[in-house]
Length: 117
Image (tube, rainbow, N blue to C red; front, side, top):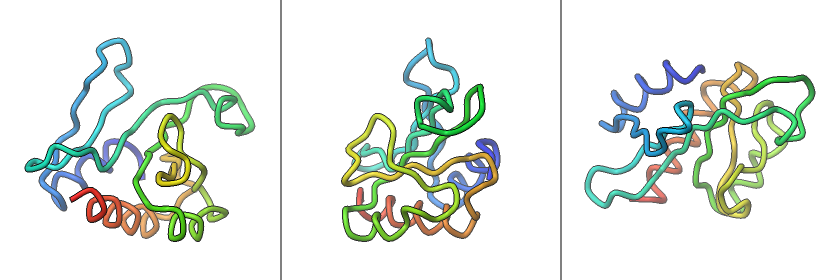
């Protein structure tokens, strides 16, 4: 799932539009609940080397809240890594480069949305 498809999915499923909070980082945006304003997802374009990934350039990463036990069960699946710039015990990162299955992304989005409600 690429960032544009993710935006459409989140808008349709959760009624949330991306918010661009940092003008200096146009590739970074958040999704948050309308009512309590809590974030349930953060998308960032991060240098592959900072994530310990092979290759050069940036990759889009979606950080989602999971919790330590359930989140740990997703680690090791294709495209799922430790979060970047978030608490690594309670958040996971999902690469938006096609390596993570869309089913996994949707499951983790649902979990993050529920945990932050």
